[in-house]
Structures are given as structure tokens and as C-alpha cells.
Length: 62
Image (cartoon, rainbow, N blue to C red; front, side):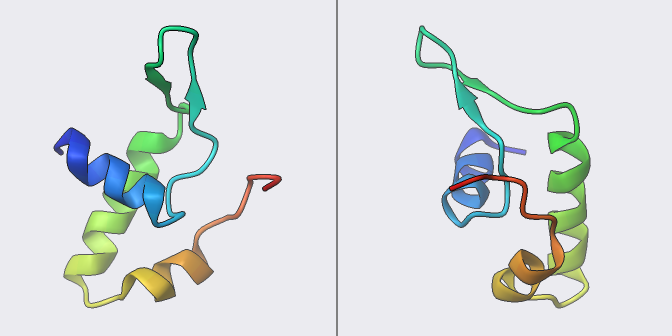
């Protein structure tokens, strides 16, 4: 998966708990790969991003 696709999902609120290190690099939680695979598979099955947002766990305190 491309960096731009991962950042797109992050922007859309589908990939949470992304932290920034002091050097500006993103640090993803251990479950990020599983979540990204779920998003891709569910989109291929016909789910919209809005539907996925409602189904995915919301763990940010934002």
C-alpha cells in the first residue's frame, strides 16, 4: 500500500492513534496493518468510507 493511501485513510479518520515522532515521522500502532487490510477488503466488498468509519473502533480522544 502506498504512503499516500495510508495518509488518505488517516485523514478520513479511519486510521487512528497515529503519533508523530520528534523527527516528524509517523508512528503507527501495531494493529494498523490489520485495520488497513480490513479497510481495503471492505471497500472491495462495496462498503463506503462513511460506513467503514461507523464500523471501525474509535480510539482517539479527539
